[in-house]
Image (cartoon, rainbow, N blue to C red):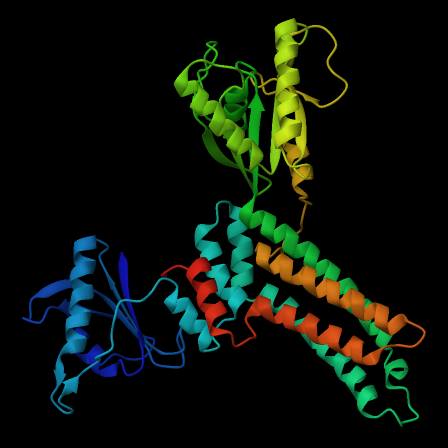
Length: 448
């Protein structure tokens, strides 16, 4: 099935033309969609939602037809042609300004007509793009407004506290100390606590949405491709005993407890005269330098070989030279099934062949990512939400300093609360910067 959706003002006349009769609001009608010459394009369902009771807050007409691209193109062309037809009563086009919607425009109109806020609009795209079940459920909660309600509660608490501060500034001659009587310090402490919890939830939601990039790096034949296959549970990368088999990156997104991990297998790191392999090694270093986590894979069966040790030292030197200090490197020793001696004290030991130690690796990756097991109720979030909440936290901390000083600087306290409130407004779109709104919708929404 495919849907052609129209949204705007004054769709009633166009609805009559397209459907051959008036439609009852919010009631599905099974009928023929006819071309201008009276031939039937298709038969399907038509639904009419008069403003303001629709997703966008405008008149909305949905034509649900069979999903073939040709049929939908014909139906779309008929809608545009019917809108350009002259209305006998007015001698003007029935809907002269009807056009193809821009990407994200239905969500944008719903936002501008106060049907959803900005966080909910972003959740629509997140729900469609969700790569795991947990991400989809969390996006659905954000779309239902759970994240927005939490942000709204923080905003209301901040507004109430700011009103108390400004009342004290406006009436300094009053004997009553508004701030002490209203327990302003206690309110600010409770606000800080709730803010910390919201930031923690948002971090987890952003991780659930975006995941982390994990790059497997090491010498040829250390078992990188075998480890990717073992983590993915499928034969994605070719595995042979021939060094240099992997010439380019192989990527797969897996999920651990609902968290997406974008795992990348790279070419073995070594000196090579083969031009194709050299390109693959260069690309491997590009992926390593942009990783969130590097799995530094070692081969236990070769740990005592002089040439192997020398090559390992060179790789470690290059990692120290090129890798940002903020990127964690997880030392992993592979092929534990093939040795009988002692294993290294540091790092993780595993067997990509038998699966031994894989659960410990998965748990360690979640720990590095910062994931914490959550009960039901986690909402999806984005990095911009996390950044906004960190900004709020910064202003609240400064406000606390001003309030707790021996001589409280109330004007500075009120200003920090105002700035914190403004940062909260960025999350749900409580601002009037049209350029910023256009940028957000063009980047974060899709034409659905």
